[in-house]
Amino acid sequence: MPIRRTRPALVVVERDEVLRSALTFAFELEGYCVSGYCDGPTALAGALGPDACIILDHNAPHMSWSEFLDRLPAERKQSPRAVLIASRPSPDTRKRAQAAGVEIVEKPLLGDALSRAVYRLLIA
Image 1 (cartoon, helix red, strand yellow):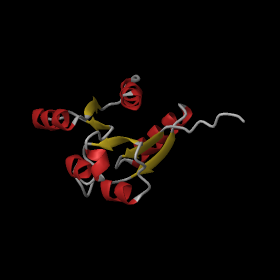
Image 2 (image 1 turned 45 degrees about the horizontal axis):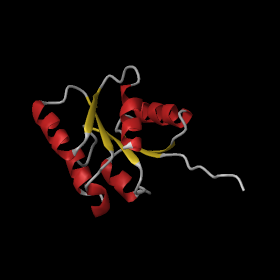
Image 3 (image 1 turned 180 degrees about the horizontal axis):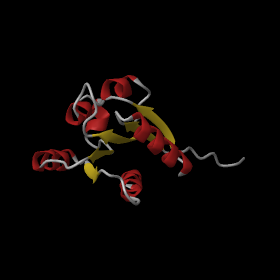
């Protein structure tokens, strides 16, 4: 019987539809199973699996990134497996992200920094 391998799950929460589509496409090419959402409440209402890695827009509408992480199911809060994408994050944002165990990747998304951050979360 062949071994069945599942693709790693990735959730992209990004308000910009073009960027969300581009990230979805790029990570699907890398072999991920990607679900894209325009905001936090929609993502939380979706099928957010327990092992999914989350790419979270710093300025997503309707819910702050820290509120989104606070609303994760209890079993996810200890290790949110999330990457925050942000343009010019403030020192306070950096401090709160570090305290939450969330890596920040700065926009513009150049090179493979985001891919490497997601990979580090998945192998941790």
